[in-house]
Image (cartoon, rainbow, N blue to C red):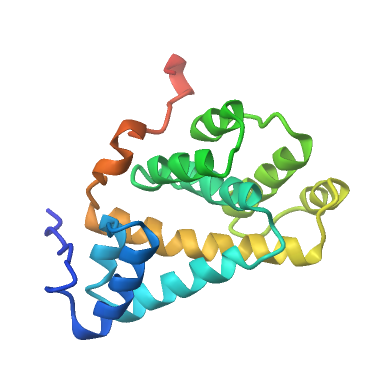
Length: 192
């Protein structure tokens, strides 16, 4: 049985995490998500995660495209904690409701360019980065470029940290996103 991981407050966190948790609290309007509260046990992880999260926001990908990358990774890696959060964040970007729901189901997006991004991200994950030339060509044909292909990898690095943390820690879903609770749909063997 996996031992429960600590979810720190600013007061209980290691000294090296306190300022980062303060910044998270400020950025989230007065609350600290349980993911960051859990990561606070390892200040270097929390710092790395927060830094890469901020760097991904600086990429040439739009906010909606960033959410496509994140939510595709969340679906593929079955992150029950991250899908609700990124449903909330996708809605905040004004992503259309069809695409928000399609990402939750691993389905096709309405915009062909966003769909190419989803398929490229999915291919990177499923092949562990060893995508085919056809996958790469399809991405470039959708008017993405080499820089953006590499930026997707940055987004996947962010998600690797959160997925692995949530997986081993069993991070509890935050009240703010409980209405978006999610389990990966099963399609095999006649299940939906």
